[in-house]
Image 1 (tube, protein in one colour):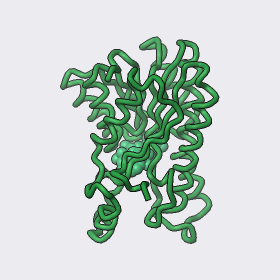
Image 2 (cartoon, rainbow, N blue to C red; image 1 turned 45 degrees about the horizontal axis):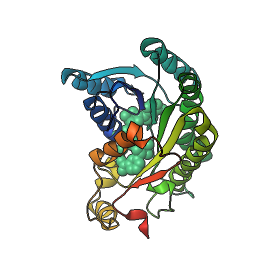
Image 3 (cartoon, helix red, strand yellow; image 1 turned 30 degrees about the vertical axis):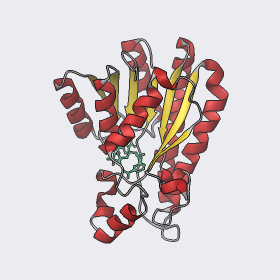
Length: 250
Ligand SMILES: NC(=O)c1ccc[n+]([C@@H]2O[C@H](COP(=O)([O-])OP(=O)(O)OC[C@H]3O[C@@H](n4cnc5c(N)ncnc54)[C@H](O)[C@@H]3O)[C@@H](O)[C@H]2O)c1
């Protein structure tokens, strides 16, 4: 997969999935900007990649802040002169069913999971258009494709919106050479599901729903991102790609 010398931004890059995406893309020669609210985690991953010879840099940012997006994209463009790939990956989950959730919690979920992808697209697209194209990859979830009985409705709604934002962007900006695709992982053992996995029954439930009989790994997800970011995916646009061992097959 050719991503050599592409400039890439990844949000939530201090976390379980984003950090692996950064490792894999750097290992294939990309220059990756890691973005995260948690400076300690984000900087640690960046240092690890640099120590292994990768081209990684870190910016602390809040993906819900328009000002932070404006500054981060400007810094990347001013430094590298371009932005080839944006991975809108940061996300949260407030694990409450709809009848227990407050409207403020609902809005927070929407702001972090969906608003962040909107802002990322808003600031990346003008840079990509000016240089003749680029690729945007949005991290949704299997919950962006199906109603999932174990998952909070607000999370499902926020990820469903990411799925359709992706298709709308793919359709409108294809003429500018910009591809936009979403990825839909099933459960991966990252800090994101730590609370869930403290309960062996809930972990077994998640495992039991996967036809391929195992949980997804961060590498499964990162390899899909590598493909969608690469030149080999030049004709792949508006796709909602499950990385789920068949969870959404039935
Ligand atoms: N782990 C899973 O089972 C799973 C499955 C499907 C989809 N996803 C999605 O994958 C993405 C990454 O999940 P993960 O498993 O790596 O989770 P994680 O908790 O390990 O990482 C998420 C990262 O996002 C960062 N973040 C949170 N809010 C932020 C904000 N406002 N600004 C900037 N950074 C912020 C956190 O600091 C963290 O480093 C999320 O969008 C999640 O919804 C995860």
